[in-house]
Length: 345
Ligand code: PHE
Image (cartoon, rainbow, N blue to C red; front, side, top):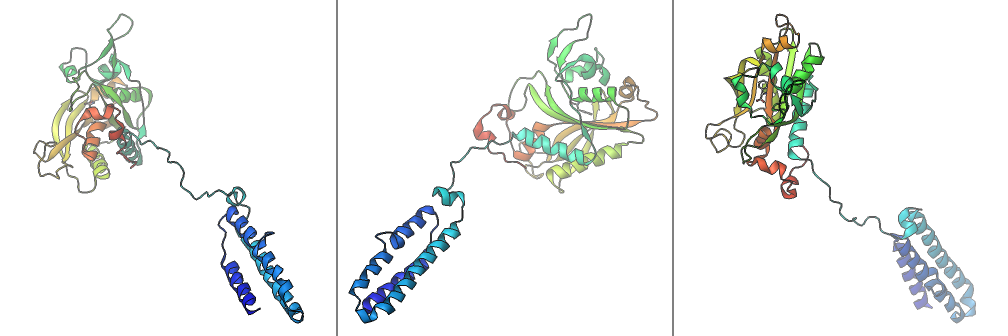
C-alpha cells in the first residue's frame, strides 16, 4: 500500500513537470498516461489488491490522480493552441534551405549613393539616349565639327553623316542629356544625368570602351563659381567623410569657362602616397566649370540674365576610391566572386 501511494506521487510529479512542444509530444503524453495501456489505467488495476476497508479512501486518491493527468493533458493541448505546428506536428522553428540572394552591382550602389546626395540638394535626375546625334553630344556643347577638342573623346560612330541627319554616335559623355534638358526646360534648371558613356579606348586595367558618369547642371540667376565649389565639396564630404580635402586646378573644356578639375585627398593612402595617387596624395575625380555663354545661347537661354555651373565625373573612379578596385575590367566581367563582395550601403 505504502509503495503504491509513493508510486502515485512519483507519477503525479512526472505529469506536473511534463511539457509538449508539438502535437507529436502531446500524443506521446496521452498514450503514456491516459491511453488504454497507460499508467492511469494500470494504477486503477491495482484497486483489486486494496483491502476492502481502504477501498473508499484509495478510490478517492485514484480519482484525484486521474484528474491531475486529464487536466494536465487539457492544459498542454491549450498551450499548443491551434497553430500550424500543433496541427501538422512539424517543427517550424527549424531553419529552412538557404535561398541565395543576389547583391547589387558595385557601380549601381555607388551611382545610387551619388544620386541620393545630389537629390538632397534639390537636383532632379534626367536620362537620355545612349545613341546620340552629333548636335547633342558635340555641336550644342560648343564643339563644332572641326574643333580639336573632339579628339579628347575618341568617338564610336554608328553611322556617318548623311544628307538628312548629322552623324549618329554612342554618346561620349552625359552632357548630351544636359543638352536635351536645356532644349526642353527653362531655367531654373537643376539636374544630374547618370548614365553609360562610350569611348574608343583599348581595354585595360585603367581604361575601358564604356564607363559610367554622373554629370550635373545648375542654371539660374546669380549662380557663381562659389556655388559650384560648395556643392562639390558637400558631395565629396557626404561620399567620403568630413575629413576629405579638395583642391581645384584650372582646366579646359569647350562647354565651360572658366573650367576646373577637382582633386580630393587620396582615400586609399590618406595622402601618404600610393600607386592610385601616383605618390602625390591627390586624385582627380571630376571636371567642372561655369557653363559657356555660347552653350546657353544655343538653347535660347540669355547669358546676361542666367549663369550656371556644370560638372561631370566617372562612377568607376568614385567606386575605385571607395572599394579599392584597381582593375576596371572587373566591373564588366560578371565574376560572382567579385560581385558578391559588395553589400548595400
Ligand atoms: N563632359 C566632361 C567629360 O566627359 C565632364 C565635364 C562636365 C566637364 C561638365 C565640365 C563640365 O569629360
